[in-house]
Image (cartoon, rainbow, N blue to C red; front, side, top):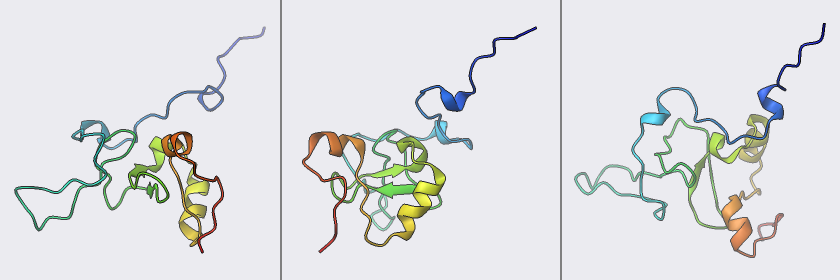
Length: 115
C-alpha cells in the first residue's frame, strides 16, 4: 500500500522561518535605516536592523553585511544562506556579500575583487 506523503519541507520553496529563540518578539525598526542610534542613551552601541525582517541584528546572531550595496546587516536565516556558505563567506577576507535587493537594483557584479 503506497502512501502519498508531502515532500519534506526542504524540497518545498518557502520563505525561511524566523529563527527559534524569541526572534519573533523583537521590535521592528524603520526599513530605510541601516543603523539606529538610541537617543536616550547616546553611548549605547547603534542598533543594526536586519535588511529583511527589520529586527535587531545582535552580536551573537549569524549575520552578514551588504558591503557593496546598502550597508544593511542581514540575519543569515533571513537571507537563506546555508550555514556552510555563511562560514565560507566569513572566512574569505576578500569576499563581499551583496543582498538580493541591491543585486537587483544596482549594477553590482556578482563577483568583485577588492583592489
